[in-house]
Image (cartoon, rainbow, N blue to C red):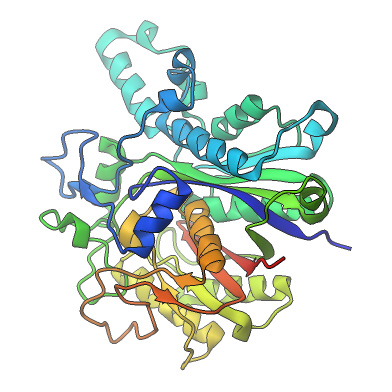
Length: 412
């Protein structure tokens, strides 16, 4: 019999806050984290805005001598993991260290490190490349550093499935515990793509908003005036545990994870499948895994990136799954946090858990002019009190890779 899996800790950091409660407070208040880019001089770029993490000091989480061994995406993951561990109260002891694992992914890893070291190569030759270049940049070192920090000797993985990374990491970790291969998993995603090549690359694809004079109004999922997504940075990490393991140690339980779906569009390298077919299948796969019905879902945290094509096709996918006249509330917290790419699924899973905990639907801000192609209840502009038992979170990525997670409200 499959084990039940619960959430006992959260670590969230993004453009609207550096802790879970700060992030959640600002999300409920409808506060945007988008502003002018300060990480580099973006004056020559078509897109000059992003959702940067503000006031972040890695020295609060990492020894000074270790900082240079890590890219910023690892710094952010270490901060989020620190909060998740502290919230969970889990102390990894030698007798069960092999039963505690880590699954933290990233879509692009250390772009900042790659750019810095390439510049060093061009200016000073190969001898100027740092010996820490590779371990500071590669995707799996976020999971590696977290496992080393806490002595977690169980399964250790790092998925890299573009913007579905965080959701896949959490879903895969859920299944590892469910089948009995670990008692606890620290899981999620992390990203730090606000670099010249990161922003420049997405801008070259014409994927980013260029509403540079109104940064806080730039991310506007489903609004008729949307013109692209806003890149964000940050990390979303959850502590997952076998229910019996958590209860035995007296852990406070935040939520239960009950469903996980995966699918592939097999259609296009960047565009979703026509009619949202892949999105439809991933949601129904998650529903089937949870052994509930679509009518049980009280809230859907959408992928909702603020791109003209993506938002319309996700709307089609939702209507195909839930019914043409569905009343399920749908919102995109990316309207405030920007798009964290590989970190998005972890952050949004955390926000979905907090929505269930507090029975509040987070808003989609900047929803001003309805688009006839997008006609669902997007919880426009203002958070809403509700009563719900289950909530679903969507993540879709380049290459047509999709993931959906379903969480259940926890009541003692």
